[in-house]
Length: 286
Image (cartoon, rainbow, N blue to C red; front, side, top):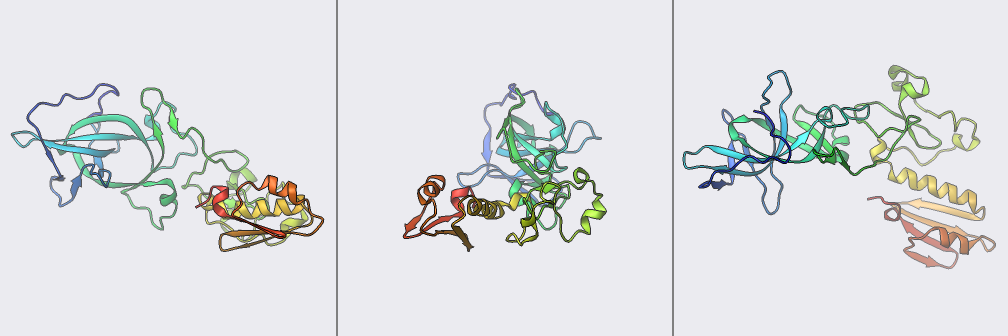
């Protein structure tokens, strides 16, 4: 089995009937196509070269002809090495791109089912199984373009997060770093109780507690809110901030620059005498 070229659809013969599901040959695993409420199942499909890993596709529709030959309409996922840009350092071993490449294949080429998680859900898995993959980009097979075309970057190397790589978080700036980028081995990083990057090591404020740590770069919204509040309190020296249960309350004294403050904090949910309240969502959080 081989993928057809993008833009060259396989011919579909007349007289086919659509099926709700298909049972993978030699198993009791049931594959379903797209419905009004749910996307189709993700499947592993046998490659033409036995030495290659299975192809991954999302089933869009299942059809059978009068002789009960079953075909699946699928949308291919590409591995990074199959894309025009190739595999890069930040691509995880289980990373896939959802392409705009649609195809029709024999159902007999389906070897099994798999799960393609969102990137955020994948980073929260306690145990990653052989059938777990993730996708954070859509990919145009003909042009090599990605959506989104930019994501958050971390570390001195300014690379997107690779969930396969260990990273350490600075207690000061809250950025995440690859051990190798800060002159450490993986073993040394695993033994750390605290870490401060070179840029923050000369800042006396680093030694103070900064509202805890995120579990990973993908879970960092509240930490960034905390840092924003600290920066605001330094800029407006008469300002104080309380952070609790997803709500930030700013308070200022009589001589604080209240007008300038309200100009900076655009998304307010409440104003009162001497205080201003905002929530995580104004910072793009959950």
